[in-house]
Length: 100
Image (cartoon, rainbow, N blue to C red; front, top):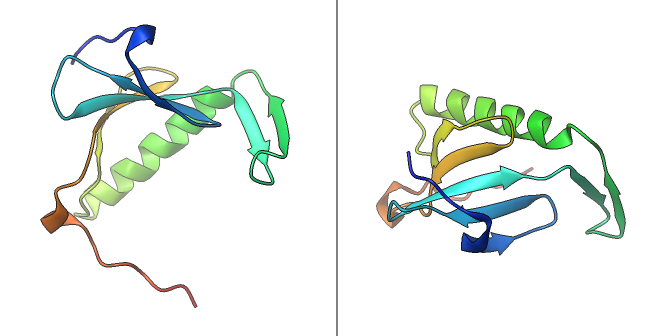
């Protein structure tokens, strides 16, 4: 697994940061303690939320992998970070699912 530093920020959203690694095609996804609603209209910071979010996200990706679905998830790194591929190869993408 590669190391990273805060000055290698690729992107930052309301609840996560994407950090560059030394491995091409891989990134670290770091969850934040921020909680948002209403497309960011409401915002709060809850201590420990990042850890719960990261654990939940990692478990969902593990379940999808166990079902044979292609995911960007590589592994859970620690309490707030997971290791992931930066992108899917186009041929591995699943078709859009229509919600009824």
